[in-house]
Image 1 (cartoon, rainbow, N blue to C red):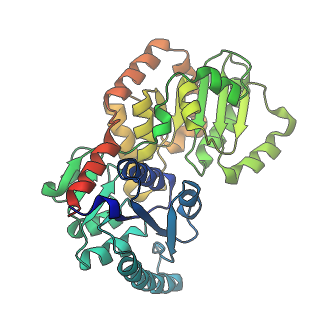
Image 2 (cartoon, rainbow, N blue to C red):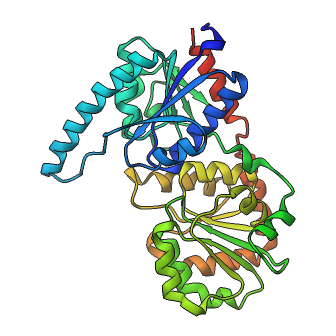
Image 3 (tube, rainbow, N blue to C red):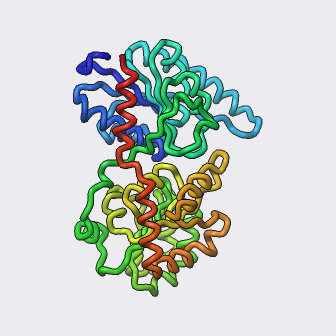
Length: 368
């Protein structure tokens, strides 16, 4: 075992909140156990991690790595050149930082980093959040000693002997209970009416926003409060479109930083079906209407959502039908208290609240 007072750990990956938040949860758990641990993140330049990781108090280095375009294009030559440059940079980062382990959480940056670490004899651990394994993680499986997964049946993507079923890390803050009074004050809710929370991930979701715009009049007539996270890129456009027609019971937010309060107060969530979102929905035991994004590899969000639907823990609306059906389905569910309770109870049965602890246990097993 390495000297725990001199731990150097690299965590690599990112691109979306679904990769970044689990990575930060793992880092926080390591720091809680070994406060002097030196943790370095390696991400992709110009992606969300370059902002979120420093905001959480960790160092990060950015690589010029990007994903290949699906069509044959001259841009792919530049992308391959950037990948080669990223591999050289990753080797230098590892040589200079001298980590005792490299942890990959998915996303472009983890490929050059874990490849380099493996070649240099450094143990590697992968954390796969989804029910469908991403291309990067499948390629890195041979180079990794342990692969932590959140869904059963992942041996179809990875060597069975390397798999550890851990669940997904969730942000500790969301586990706070009994915040309803603080939450109502935070979101400036004027009533004690039920709360519908629409959340399209950290970047927002166009489909959910279009469904809300279509259903806003019927929602305005109901005795409910609606928290609507639009995403920063859609927020101004929606505000301009609605102008002075925003109903008093609909609260339009670009980004929700206090997800603990939003989860606590929500009676029903409408969400995309990213792995992190679903893990958090299960941990807080909330009923949900899931609208899987079609713009993801191998339609993996639909596979994620089906895992909850099959367990009686959520209902699903297809992206192509959401503009017409989503709000009606959400309203019908809000009016069915028994169904809300049933979905919430089944969601919490799927929860893995100790996932972060289990993953970090595996990290320390690999450090020699």
